[in-house]
Amino acid sequence: MLNIENTSYWEQKTFFRNVDFLIVGAGIVGYSTALHIRASYPNAKIVIIERGILPSGASSKNAGFACFGSATELYSDLQTMPEENVWETVELRLKGLNALRNLIGDEQLKLKINGSWDLITSEERELFNSTREKLAYFNEQLERISGEKEVYSVDAEVGGKFGFAQVETSIYNRLEGQIDTAQMNASFYRKVIDAGIHVLFGLNAESIIEQNNSATIVTNQGEITATKVAICTNGFASQFINDEDIRPARAQVLITEPITNLSIKGTFHYNQGYYYFRNIDNRILFGGGRNLDFEGETTSEMTTTPLIQHELERILRKVIMPRKEVKIEHTWSGIMGVGKTKKPIIKQVSESVYCGVRLGGMGVAIGTLVGKELAGMIKF
Image: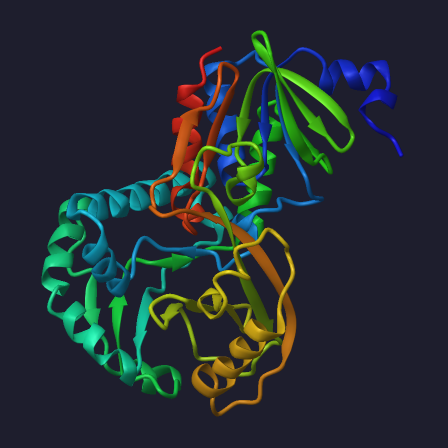
């Protein structure tokens, strides 16, 4: 097998020698970091390495929600987090979504703002009542942050509108949307290539060797040395950064075969956001279920399990599509990075190594800004 040592002089000169900035991870954060570094250093050699044949993290594996906070999530966060932190997090997500839209473009993202629904079952009536009492306050805060009025409202007709079963009512968020994450990553890729940034797939970073004024990344195909290294691997980052609270969190997903006359349009949060689904290409994409096995889903193994897949299928057939026969076409999983708080880790790890990780399942919303902030931190 060809490895770095066996490449030609031309290849070593172009891709592996005299690297100024080496970025580990070709997801939203990695691509954004590279593009913002390029803006500051037009002549630098920038190389991105990625372990998979495609980006391996959650940014192109999960649901593609352009979201910033369902009403029940905000209510729950206010019970456990300082109030100012909750609204700072919402503001970061909104600014991040705008940054992503400005960088990639709505057409390339295939952005559709159809709104989102926080679905409420009979078991969640107490949570709904408590959250409903806060909606005026939530709308005041969203207007302060975004300038948009009446973002949240009660929609008691959602079950009849879309044919759901076991759903009593909902809280609607009119600003949330959905994107095509593979198209997003393809657009990022074209941008970095146009910017003269090299992207190398199939290179799995295994360890870091610190040196004077540089760092060497040991990969499965050999070593690459760079003046500055940025770790942008989110849920996979704990192998490089062991002094921070970073845990992988697997999200399992399924998609149906095309459904005739599918009326469901939008993004939906179910069971306090532990489950989520959306329409795409006349199909239902449905994911979640970590709450069934938190310990087992704290893993970087990109597989699926019968426990969660069976529950996803049960909810799909009993709640989401109770009056239609649906068939599952495909299942997969994506790895997020989480911790005890929802604040991402953006910091200098050592003289030559930096990181932008732990996006808390909000990579689409905040990844672009995390990359921008990380790039601004790296001094060459």
